Length: 87
Image 1: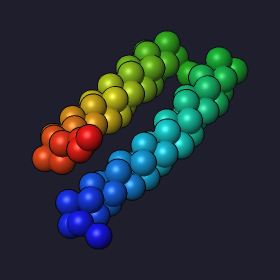
Image 2: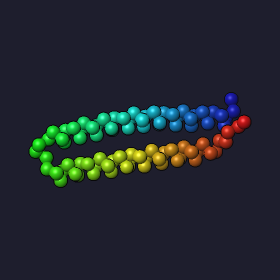
Image 3: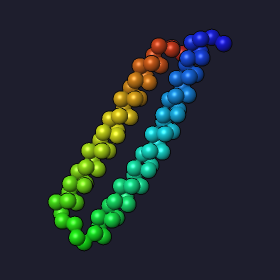
Image 4: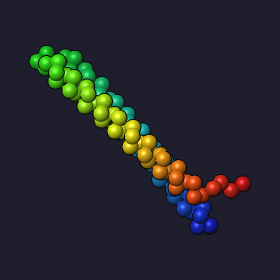
């Protein structure tokens, strides 16, 4: 088997594994956000400042999560550019 083809398959496999893992992590994160929101809506002892802080923390986390995904996707594209499609 051609070395380039083997490397391309390995990169594709790693990209697929990353995408699937990231998707699972994203789903778990979304569910946790829903649970925390539900808890905060029912927590009578929490002041509005604490609620705002938690909401802001969630936004910052989501933003970092999406920036990480974009960085990984960009780097996979960069690596894939070394293996042009043969046709």
